[in-house]
Length: 86
Image 1 (cartoon, rainbow, N blue to C red):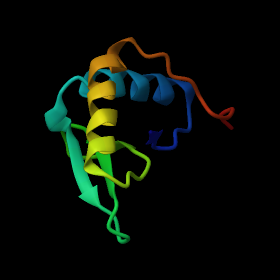
Image 2: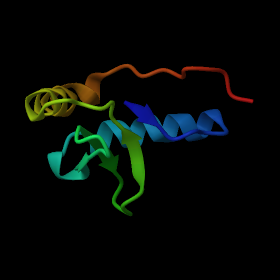
Image 3: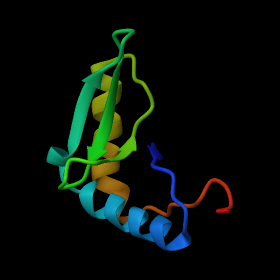
Image 4: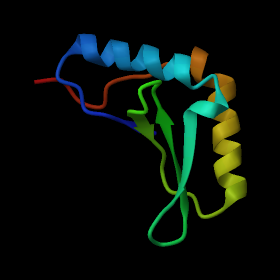
């Protein structure tokens, strides 16, 4: 999954905390069709802001497996920054 861009380490830590908390509830995920007929999902905050977006899936089965995995494991996952902040 890919999250929003952050400008501070504090923002990153808050984003990770929100991701872990919100990922525990399947109702926080929106499933969408792509322009090419594939599927992706987004994790939404309580204010309906997108927190993270998935990769594109070619089948509903693959998407559901990924969602089940995230919902089951997000609270204990270790997440890290991809690049240093400015």
